[in-house]
Structures are given as C-alpha cells and as structure tokens.
Length: 195
Ligand SMILES: CC(C)(COP(=O)(O)OP(=O)(O)OC[C@H]1O[C@@H](n2cnc3c(N)ncnc32)[C@H](O)[C@@H]1OP(=O)(O)O)[C@@H](O)C(=O)NCCC(=O)NCCS
Image (cartoon, rainbow, N blue to C red; front, side, top):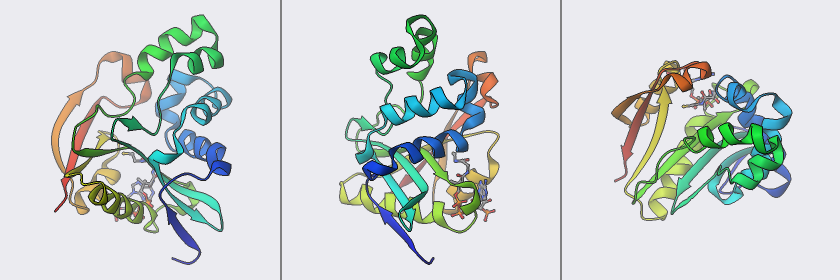
C-alpha cells in the first residue's frame, strides 16, 4: 500500500499519537476504568515502552500499532507512581489494582501481542494483517516459538482475522463481574506456533 512503512519501535514524536490511538481503539474497555480521555491518554503516554511496539506509519503519521510483550518487558506497564501522579492517591488505588490485569501474563519462549489497533479510517486495508506478519518475523528473529494474543467475546471480526493468520484458541477465561462495565464477559487466548 502506498506510503506505508512498518517500523520495529515507536518513534519518540509518536508517543502521544500512540496513546490517542490506543484510547480510540479500546475506549469502551478503558473508559470505565480510567475515566475521561485526557487522563487515560496522559497515563498511556507516560507508561508506554517504545521498543515494545511495531508500528505502521504513513508519511510519518501513526496509522497502526501492535503493543508487544516479550523478554520480560511489555509495551504498557502501569507503575504505581505514574498512576498516583495522574489520578491522586485515593482514586489511583482501585485503578492500579485493576491495571495489573491489563495485558498477558509472561510465557517464556513466546511473544504476546497485548494490543493491536489500526486508526479508524485505515481499517480493512490490510494494515493489521501486515503488522501481525511483521510481528511474526520479529518473534522468529528473537528465537521465540509462538505468538499469542487475547480476543474478547464481542469482537468476532478480529477473531476471524486471527484464525485466518494461523492462530488457534487455547483457552477461554470467563471474567469476573468487575470487568463487565468494559463490555465483554470472556477472553479467549489464541496462539500461533512459529515454524
Ligand atoms: C482489528 C484491527 C486491528 C484489524 O486491523 P485492520 O487493518 O482493519 O485489519 P486488516 O485490514 O488486515 O484485515 C481486515 C480484517 O479484520 C477484521 N476487522 C476486525 N475489526 C475490524 C474493524 N473495526 N474494521 C475493519 N475490519 C475489521 C475485518 O473483518 C477483516 O476480516 P474479514 O476479511 O474476515 O472480514 C482493526 O480493525 C482495529 O484496530 N480494530 C479496533 C481495535 C481492535 O478491535 N483490536 C483488536 C483487539 S483483539
């Protein structure tokens, strides 16, 4: 596709656009926990690790993002001081507790895609597919044996995309009531073995 480049880390100037893209793509999941956009975006921008992203750029602008977790480091981590600085001590406490569950648990020898998001006007043009192919290549280069991700029960289109790319479901977690305001009730883990 014309003008698109795929890069194995988030350029420093795209930190804030990455936070915006995450919030836009996952607003229904994050808003009940993190409140309004400005708090959530500021927290994401403060907490992301640029070297755990694969991004799609068009003429330098961010149009797609895969947030990754491998080798004991993840794209988005929420250290207590950052959450407390954004929300104040009392309001930060319940948020910090729930934020501990965002993203996949570490699985040795595997790479997890914690987030996959394409800007709204750019969806359905193959960018998500290309990002995942770049992630597979990265995982192979890192000597990892599989790529995993989670998909919610309310996102059948994304699940179809993952199945087409060789992911298979391995387990489904029914979520506690605490997560219901985020609009989904089950999370299926899917794994693609790398040859
Ligand atoms: C899911 C997502 C990353 C796919 O990226 P993409 O660039 O649109 O994907 P591609 O163009 O490579 O592939 C299109 C496929 O993705 C599916 N898809 C999933 N959500 C879609 C959306 N909101 N818009 C368009 N296509 C979507 C399409 O149905 C299509 O599959 P199909 O041909 O079987 O119908 C992107 O649509 C997105 O950011 N969605 C919102 C965030 C999200 O749901 N992320 C995944 C969380 S598990």
